[in-house]
Image (cartoon, rainbow, N blue to C red; front, side, top):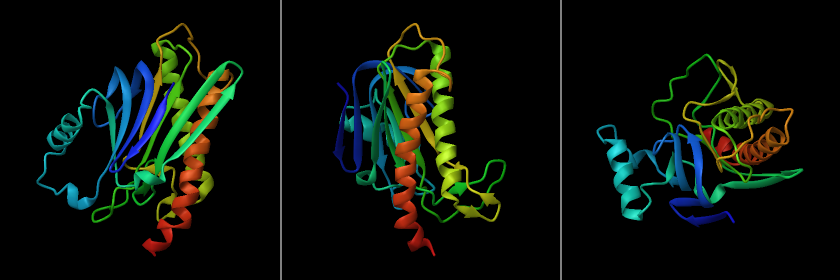
Length: 217
């Protein structure tokens, strides 16, 4: 069984067993085998311009005995994570997200974010259904679509238009190796992944809009 453990500044998602994990996370990006997905909460002061962030993060993970984990960095308070599980037929998807929009962007544009906290959206989705590599790619695209839908619906306006994400969003999808070759919107897998990711991100955005956005004005 998967389990979520809060140990601030860490949030740990134990997948319950080693799984294939696809991501572009700061630690162990790409398609790897891992049992844990971690969030490490940081502040701007933790990451001065002269710091080698990769080396620092590797040392932090090694000190925790978690260098083999897929790991995110976020300035969001990790106690404000959102956890949603959806079952569609025989498919169960669990999505955990931390959400901040302080460095929000609209697709195809860039805003000067120097001096701002990095309020990224980080999403981890765990599936119990075995997927092929092709289905893993499709599942991560569905999670990204869910993220973008939730952000657009929130109506966070920028000088360039309505935000569609942030400049540092990251998504990880975990699943056993298996035979499923499709994970699109017409499938139970796609429906479960999309709904779980959408619900987790939407809840995180609602909380951020109600609290953090006011403090930025």
